[in-house]
Image (tube, rainbow, N blue to C red; front, top):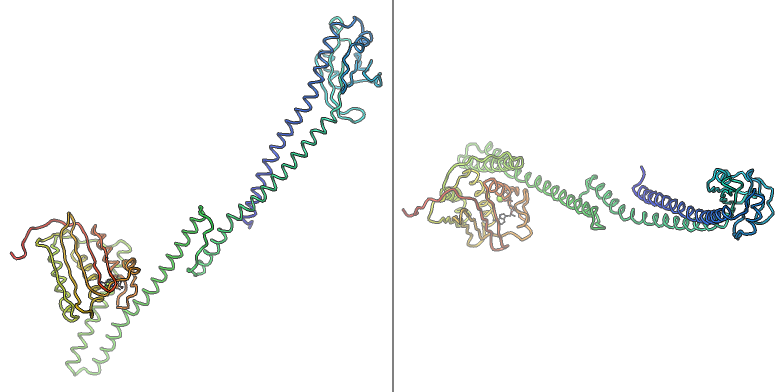
Amino acid sequence: MQSIRKQLISNYVAVALFTVLLLESMFMVVITQYYLGGVERVLVNHAETAANFFNRYADAGDIYTKSNYIFENIDIEEKALVEVLDLNGRVVIDSTGSSTGEIVTTGDFIQALSGRMGTWRGRSEMDELITAVSAPIYDDNNIVGVLRYVSSLEPTYKVIIQYMMVTALVGVVVICVAFVFGRAMSKRILIPIQELVRVTGEVAQGNYKVTAIKYHNDEIGQLVDAVNIMTKEITRADQAKNEFISSISHELRTPLTSIKGWAETLQDMKDDPDVTEEGLRIIGKETDRLIILVNDLLDFSKLQAHRITLKKEEFSIKHLLEDIHNQFAVRCHQEKIKMTVLTDNKESWVFADYNRLKQVFINIVDNAMKFTAGRPKAEIKISSQVLDDQIVMIIEDNGSGISPEDLKRVKEKFYKGSSNKSGTGLGLSIASEIMELHGGKMLIDSTQGKGTKVVLVMPYFYELQQNYED
Ligand SMILES: Nc1ncnc2c1ncn2[C@@H]1O[C@H](COP(=O)(O)OP(=O)(O)OP(=O)(O)O)[C@@H](O)[C@H]1O
Ligand SMILES: [Mg+2]
């Protein structure tokens, strides 16, 4: 496996190398053409001007006659060797006088013989880089010889080579910078990725209590945030699961222990009618508790799977609240809690699932009783009123209240906060979901040490003006 870091660095260097090579070769081609072309252009100008002049003014005759005139009148170009060639390419005369008799067969000469300006680039007999320009010499419209300018390209090539060296140096510097930059960039990208690999590896091993360090506020930073939220959620879900298992085991064990204990007692003391009656009463009560628990769990799984369907009917909220009052009357009496139910002087009708709404009230009132029992002047007030097109139902207690930290989370499933009372932590989450299924909502307000207020809001069906006293 090739590491991302190596890939990033080699990509950076490859791109830089390609760009540098491309730009530098283009630059070198332009420079070479410019300099060599420049030398050739100068020679062509000279050759053209001189040939035109001689073709017009030189004495008539063969090339030998003309060559004398040419060399008497020619403007000798310092850096160039000037030669006059006959039609065989033999040097008739030149500006140094040393190469006379030499035979020239290069491309420029051949082109000049065909009446055109000829240019050629190559190596001399001394292995020197040269360029030559040839122009035809006419006598009465017949080519009788060639005027040839030869110049060394060595100084020009030296200049070009200097350019090449400077350009290559610049190229090396650019590639080094690309390498350093590539390393820095790869480090910037790689360290956060390595951190994510570490954290996800830990999570894969089952250690959820890890947090990834966020290095930069970029896309990888966002990924780090998402991973951190995910690990927190997993930790929370894991904790909730553990709490749920321990609370459900406790919830199951308490009534089961009681039932088992009473069953054994009843076996031993079959003949005592008082014991039998008390035993059966407790077994019945504990069985009810178990049924409620199992129903809660069933409801919860149905709500999770969105399998709860409401059996809606028209009923009066006043009727529902009376039902609740009656259901809790005995328990209120036993636990010395005052319960008052207050509705405005109207029958408020709703189109809702009676049993599900009753379940919401049972869950909330059960909480109110659990957390109010035993406190001085324990009281639970239940009220309902119509506001605009909503029906608002309030269950208020003066119990222990909920701490601000717990208040934020009490609607979460299996969340019991700091409560050590019996329960699975499902009541409020089920109640809240049922209210939402009805197009309503459940709001909770609480002050620790003072009490809790649960507000249920849902659309009402219609209102029947009726005086209670009637
Ligand atoms: N009226 C209240 N007064 C004080 N605390 C409350 C009140 N209602 C709810 N709570 C807090 O909110 C938590 C969640 O309540 P919820 O009804 O969801 O679960 P539970 O009562 O613990 O268990 P379950 O209702 O499933 O038997 C409770 O454990 C308690 O800490
Ligand atoms: Mg509850």
